[in-house]
Length: 402
Image (cartoon, rainbow, N blue to C red; front, side, top):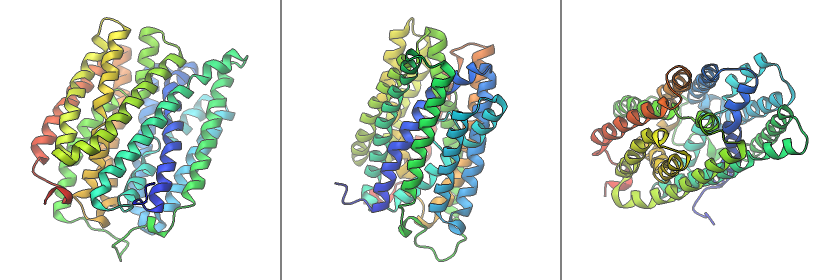
């Protein structure tokens, strides 16, 4: 199975399995956990923002140091950051310490450690032939989505632990301890990567982007920043908080919602790979994402829990089809030796807007209205979808030029 995927690609698929599971369940209860420490929702938003700013800086450093230090060493370093963070959360209760650690390790972000994932995507791009690149990204996204679903269900263990007699604080610490252990397994998997994971087609350690690539970088940075800002208003931690506050749902119920959502997203990932072969990567990204963007704005304005859930879960069938296609597209339109630098620079404005989003959303939820971020997020994402299609509809990846 997956004989067409290089050994490194298979290792990183296994990493994604663990990564998505651990990041998922922590992100669901993270905002609620911070509330138990005495933080307001606006303060929680600031903590999430700080974590994403930290991720941005690490992302930038990884893009520039990958040739000098090596991708494997950098991935191992990021893995240990998560291990240490999980351990500290499992052992200590000092609020100031936990906030500082959460910021450094980007705790509470469902996507996992951003800088590590950037390098993983670059390595995956050279782990198969071009014509199967989108399929490989779709497989990775599907694995991530199924693992996220499992992680969402795993959140229900909090309720079980409390029912067994543990205090709420002790139950959270057990969950963080499991997070640390899982990330240690990821570090061991990173150690198995071979030389093929490093930069290919490059003699020099300094990479200069060609003028065309720089043009793509500027345009995509602006567009992806819009999409990221819209998504930052509704991070998984804040959506979980919204369900908790508006409908009074317990963690096991919230976990079940996110689990079903992730399974529906898994369907969309593999569908994206097939659809993109027929209508192209850009068309797949926009045609699937636009309806989900419009639906986003309507979710909190439904009359009850069930109607909100129908739209939220229905959106999950479409909202993630652009993930593997976007990853594939951004790797395809630049030269192989430019990919890591391009991705790290492309991620900077996205990370900045992603960092700003939770703070703005937290402020909106506390001072304007609990549901306001959904409306703003949907509008911004809709503008992004239309702009992306008009800007890039004629720029084709290699496999679509024949």
